[in-house]
Image (cartoon, rainbow, N blue to C red):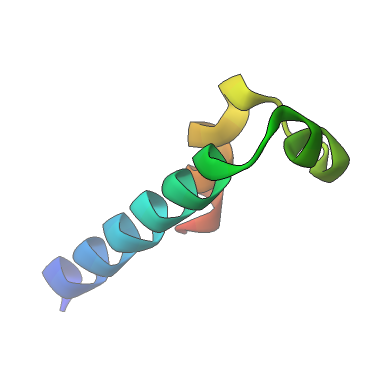
Length: 47
């Protein structure tokens, strides 16, 4: 079960990084996210 949960969290992390990475700096700014913060935002989203 723990392995499945870890894999699903990793998938959520990767999806979030990909989606945020495709956004323009303006779109990220509108969300209150800096480009260098994408990975930390994705980590929090995957928990």
